[in-house]
Length: 422
Image (tube, rainbow, N blue to C red; front, side, top):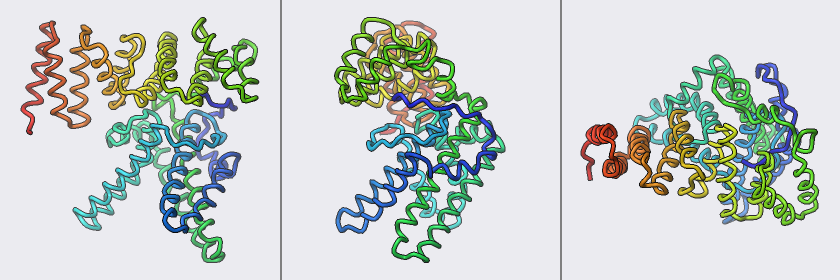
């Protein structure tokens, strides 16, 4: 995760006391600029041939920015995020995949059971969709977001505020549609722009609201907002902060990125630096377009996060790194094993599976490899229904296992998986 601008940390007051500011959120700063730009870009849809592609890109950009709003708000920052043109964020793509999967589910229900089943599915999806979106923002795992049990667990832990937010989301979206349609009739020439403006305004307000519910309920959900972590540490350049960033900031501001990188690289490699320095160094490496250096630094940064017991932050870094390279493993295999176990127990099944598989590829002869194989196989069976792949892992683990107790566990797991068709 790239370093974010510092902002005042908002108190977690009940969301219903912030309804006016939530409704007006899209009219502030970068959100308003994004709103206007996307609405005007929507006019390009009328251009022959490329209009359809432009329309898709506009909605992708809108969903990306809306999801960034949700994540930034959930982290405790009440100001809109800065505009980012790229759409290469793995979590954002998983969010878009989530929307497409839910649409596919609705179409399948209509096809199989007609309008009645389709209406029932629509009600269920509409109720669970905010929970799924918030689960994805917390865990970064598409499988966790798609698991109804995870979303229902979130609803149970949040309680009444979830139902209130669900109702308010419906009101926001319905109001935007009605307002846009009315203005389109009154001003037909500006109708398409006004309608897009109203839809995107509603989208940004809704995602800000969902993010605020996460922030308000973070203790019940076991989620630590970034702003609260930042609040526990001195700011860069402030008394007690890291003076190194005070040297780097003017270089970056003047466009001397190479000099800033060289300075940071020297410091990061030769002495212990703060996590703030690591974050800035990581961001500059990404901007420089050097994926190999980003991954190399990620191992060092993750090692420091684990030593400082910032496991939640390390999980996010591990997810980013595995998205970039499925073979990525931390410097210390025990750190990788600990993070994989935390992800497995915390419901981040995809992250746990990816971490175990990376460990198995890198350290196939490790004494703990049979245990990793067992955990990965059970995730494949229980979470993803991939029995054939699970059986391969179990057989490999059995061939490596020397401990009788582990051999018995693997034999039992193989029997439970049973013969695999095909």
